[in-house]
Image (cartoon, rainbow, N blue to C red; front, side, top):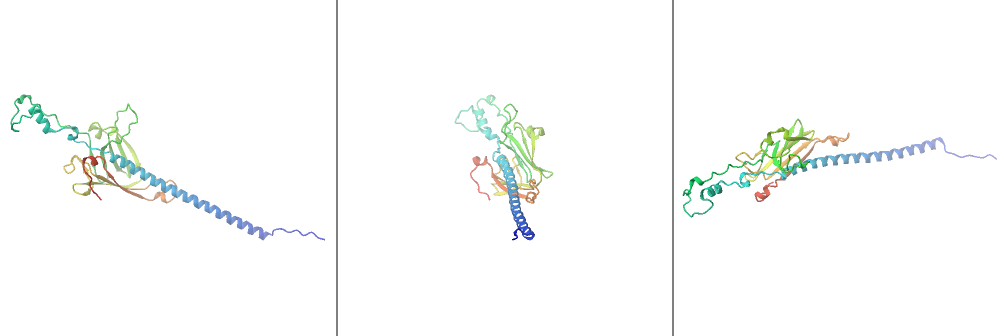
Amino acid sequence: MKNSKSGFTIIELLLVSILLFLLAYSTFMSIRSTMDVKKSIDSRTEILQSGRSLLELIDRDLRMSFFVDASDLGWNPKEINNEAGTGGEDTGGDEDEEPENPEAAVPPPPKPVPITIFQATRNELLFSTRSHQRMSADSPENEQHFVRYRLESGKLIREESLRAVSKDDISDEKQFRETVLIEDMKSIEFAFWNPRAQRWDDRWDTNSSENLDTLPEAVKVKLKYVPEALDDSQDATKEVEYETSVRMGQTLFKRGPVKYP
């Protein structure tokens, strides 16, 4: 009597191998697709985070901006002249009457010149703000300083001075520290809300007759840039655009609420 032995044929082994290969391949493609989605989400998150951080920096600088004129420093020429002419007492006579002792009249002090500024165009900002952080207690710095945003050779640059003590701090380039915020900046646009004319202006100067010693109610910021590529994905090389409006903090105390679009 012969012993019969059973086993797998070559065709069966090939079919099993093909099935195992297809199962492994589908599992690999599923894992790879999941990893690609994760990279894309991480890239988008990083892009959004970088844009949010940039807007927060601009928002902080603008909200803490300030402007001080001579009246804020207690300078009032009418009160000074009255005190100098009458000695601070009400004589009850004619207002045009000369003081009894003209030689005792003291000339009023010179008008103080505040070290503050807000000069801006459609693509550049220069203003005084209180956003500076001192790194050392012994350094010649204070929280009040000048900040400039400008676009140069496709780069968004932020410059800040160490302090705001005199007008020389604006013109002295050695006092400014330069930081490149965006390497591939396509455009940056600013607009300034004028409460008197009820419109957005593309220029603002606190030394001009139209905006003398006043800050805008709000500043609109529009950015368009190409974020740095974190990997070879196409999402990282697309242009992104952000737009926001910043309400100036000091104007909330000097004026009532103004509606703007």
